[in-house]
Each structure stands twice: as C-alpha cells, then as structure tokens.
Amino acid sequence: MSTVLLLFCVLSIVTIATAFLTIYSRNPIHSAIYLVICFFSIAGHYLLLNAQFLAVVHIIVYSGAIMILFLFTIMLMNLNKENEVHKPRFTRLGAIVSFFLLCVVLLLIFKNSKPIPDNSYSVTGEDFQSIKVLGKVLLNEYMVPFEYASILLLIAMIGAVLLSKKEKVEK
Image 1 (cartoon, rainbow, N blue to C red):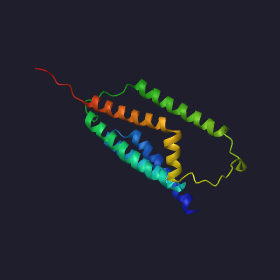
Image 2: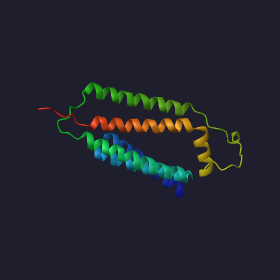
Image 3: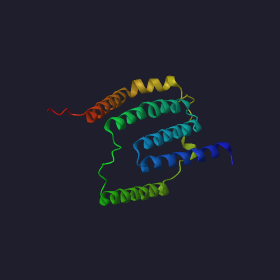
Image 4: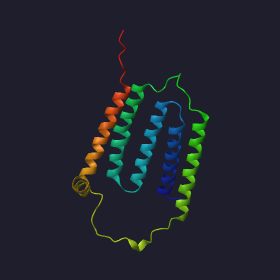
C-alpha cells in the first residue's frame, strides 16, 4: 500500500469520525473542538490533491475565523444549561428517518453515476493553482458573489451578537 493511499485512508477515517462526534457530542465545546479537527483533516485532503493554497486558506478561514465565531456564539448564548428542554422523540425519529433517506439518495446517486472518460480533458498549460490567476478570477469574474458572501457573514455575526444580548429588566 502506498503512503499516499495510507494517508488518504487515515485522513478519511479522522474526518468521518470527528464529523460524527461533532454531531453526537452533547457538550457544545467538545463539538466545536471536533469540528476544528475535522477542518484540519479536510485541509490534509487538499494537500493530498496538491492544492496547497486552498489548504492554507481553508485552515485560516474555517479552522481559525469561523471556529472562533462559533466558540464566541456558544459562550455568549450559554448553550450548556442543565435545565435545557430535550427534544421530543418524534423530532429525533424524524431526524433519523431524514438521515437514512439522505443516505439512500446519496448511495443511489453514487451507484448511477458514470465515470468521466480520460480523454475528455484538454490541457491548456495554464496554472490554475497560482495565486495570481485565482486573484484575477475572484476579483474580476466573481466580485459580486464575493461581496455578497462578506455581507452575509457580517449579518450572521451581528445576528449572533443580538441573540446573545441580555435584555435589562427594569425594577
């Protein structure tokens, strides 16, 4: 077994296990830590695909900035209360049924998909992984969606702060 295949298998197991633990863990802080580990293992997959820039940006943006926002939101909203109302069984049953239906749909899609023939790609010789090409594409062709994404993140951050704000009770 080659080292790349072994590394891919280890990263895949870590990714799937930490993604499952993120959902399964009852403690929100533990879930956030599992999510950070999952993000790092996905960055490892990017490195295996020889996309170093994408791996570094993924670590900076997701493992850094987004997880800090998640942790601040968890801490501000104090989600780890002992008197938290538990979900009814009907809701849990609906989530389990939805999960299995989604798995069946994904398996059917995977089973019915056809591989791409090897001769369908044309080589242009241009390096699409360079930062220069990425910057031109991102700031020329995709400038408006890029700005919409930044506005959406700003609105989400403001919403998290407003949700966590405590109302003053007048006496």
